[in-house]
Length: 261
Image (cartoon, rainbow, N blue to C red; front, side):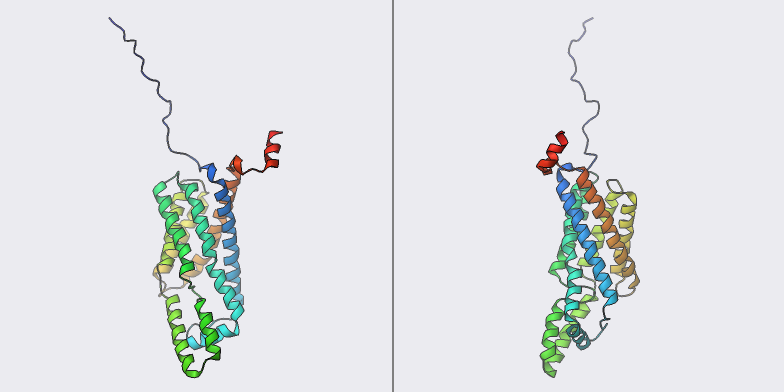
């Protein structure tokens, strides 16, 4: 009997599979995302405090709204910026979430971060908030010095902006959908499960709040509380992830010397 001397190629004990942890080469972006989440939370919390402490704005009437803005112009401008500018920082947070989550589910991570980050970026291009709009400040400045006929036209324009604020736009639902999708991916790892579950709850409530915006306003209160809490938790863990997975190229000369001793 002839014995074959042909040896089969050795096989790897474990086939190469997908990465099981976030890519450490993105450590700097994780830290930036964590810092941006912190700025987002601070601005939103300050905005909430001002909304509670500031004089109550009229809920209807273009003329009354413009007169209120004229009487509290600086405070109103500050409030609008505190609601709009955080969108820029939230977009960066979503950008940093993709490399942190992509090894868990590339498709959902890409979809969730693209929808969420894009929606928050759109808040800067569609500058309206649930409490008003920066454009109302310009109308208010004209309203103060206008004659009665001109005031009527300005009040009508203000009514249009007020109506837009109370109407569901594409931006609101997209931010909640993005939040829900990335939180579903978080259930698989990287972030603590309670953070993921909090995000799922906030996303579901946010979608309900947008869908029932004209009927029930209570959902917005709960969603408005859960969102900054979730963002704070995500930011904290992102920053810690960036410190843990810090790329050696990011280290300073002193740190490199200390590591050698």
